[in-house]
Image (cartoon, rainbow, N blue to C red; front, side, top):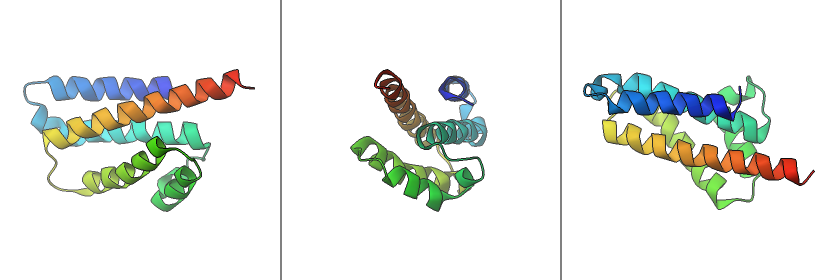
Length: 119
């Protein structure tokens, strides 16, 4: 999967949040957000799908980047995993997660474009 697929997942998550009964969809919405975050992580770090299942491996891979944006996202990602395991998720938490993952994906897209132009 590529960054465009991740953006599609976020667009659907945004759609679910915009629905009147969006509180009923918080778990599904968060699932789309987490999948989009994982796509971004895989794209940025070139980890394989098996490694992407390990929060420790992901944290180590993200720590190799000398970027405040990535460091901030790495901490947030662990919170996102905890949120996904939680029984109670508010619409505001999901909205905040959506915005943070959007920002991360934009960063990944810019980083990939920069890498492609500097080769």
